[in-house]
Image (cartoon, rainbow, N blue to C red; front, side, top):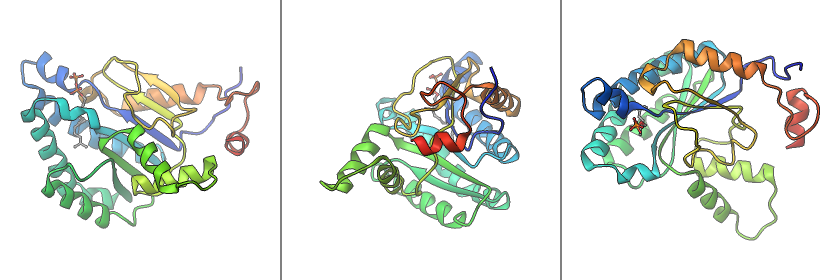
Length: 244
Ligand code: FPP
């Protein structure tokens, strides 16, 4: 069958799983895996710019991850803060706009401040919109968006705008390709609305080992997919977007 999609996805979402196992498999602790995971983030962000992806959403910390031991949570918060304090210079040079989605009020204050600064200093980037999900829950975002609207009549397009407001970074295109590393095959409350017609791609590779070649493999597989959006024939993307 002819593939319907010849171009790369506009929006890629990644559930970055397997850091902990990467660390312990090597005789280190789990936080070594998270630190290595931060390096993989740099690599994949650069590769995404090169591939012409417009929006990249990375799941860094779910609302359910607070259940982990305090030491691991604290280490992750530190890692995020360091990334957000050091990375914006490099992001700006590459034309990348960074926004953070998820709740902020439960994050340590220095991290909240780092987020605000990083968002401000990369606000003009147009090559890639990088969205980091921290203390994120798709269901909580959907509830927040719905409650902003009250009782007025609502349609899908308006709701998409509300989700953008709830996420603060503005409206984003639907997720075209959702990648999960680390061998599990579930969505774990990530971008549930946005991924309604996402193509799913799973790999057993742990996130710190995921590199440009893996992204290229996922993109090549995506381009071979026959996206029908519930119809019978492979339609050009524009027609499919209209139907949503
Ligand atoms: C899942 O692996 C990963 C996380 C909960 C943390 C994600 C964080 C990073 C990728 C590193 C830092 C990111 C930035 C943006 C600086 P896991 O710990 O659940 O691994 P496991 O399934 O092997 O236990």
